[in-house]
Length: 115
Image 1 (cartoon, rainbow, N blue to C red):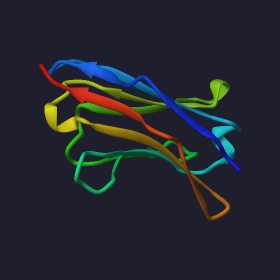
Image 2 (image 1 turned 90 degrees about the horizontal axis):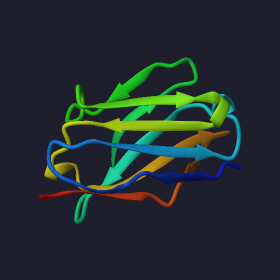
Image 3 (image 1 turned 30 degrees about the horizontal axis):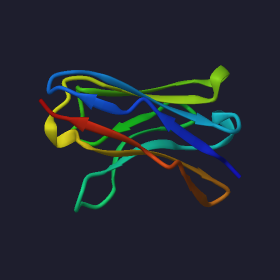
């Protein structure tokens, strides 16, 4: 099993930045692909960014050039650095991992981009 805990969300003005953190209960290198997803009100959950154990990164087109996914193995933590935030980035952001064919999700952290 894997427990995931997200943090770092909050209210930010358009053009601002936030860094989200996802702390895993075990080594992130034992988990497989880890990803950040988001769900806006009335919309389906969507992939924002992911990173494999070998470090291959993947981004949604809507965040390329603005968001960066990274990790710290010593802290069992995956980060999402979000720059140039837009109102349409407003959503609950979730961390996800897959282990032995099972998906694990955190409870999410709310990001609100508004002036």
